[in-house]
Length: 168
Image 1 (cartoon, rainbow, N blue to C red):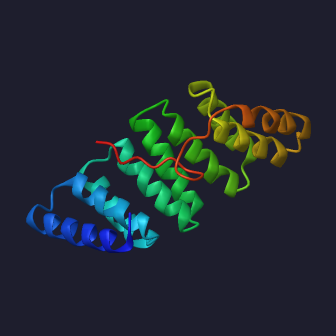
Image 2 (spheres, rainbow, N blue to C red; image 1 turned 90 degrees about the horizontal axis):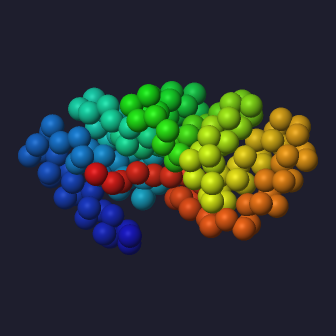
């Protein structure tokens, strides 16, 4: 999305929210627009507004991503955990929580989340690569190498290193 389109989207969503402050989906989409412009503080605020209205997995995951980009990894992990409680077994959220755990130095917990995400989506090369990083963080070099060798054969998915959810 071009910068002008993002600004227009933000303006339109703010107008929509002014007309109906109870639309969690409008707050979520406003947050997604702020993510596009890398304004993670505003995105977190918008996702928090959405969560207050509807604590669904998508909104919690998206707020967790904003927190992750703000380097508030504990807060991000808490949001990802809440998202998984709302909707268990979501590979992308397990992956996102694994990333937060990894940043916190909790490599074993990250490894568990990556392994479960891979069980759910076995062909995801990004998940395999991050599982290798977690093995490396645990000092298990042979397992890390095995993941790195397997990862290039699987298709890559996701939003950069994260999975962002805009679906409704």
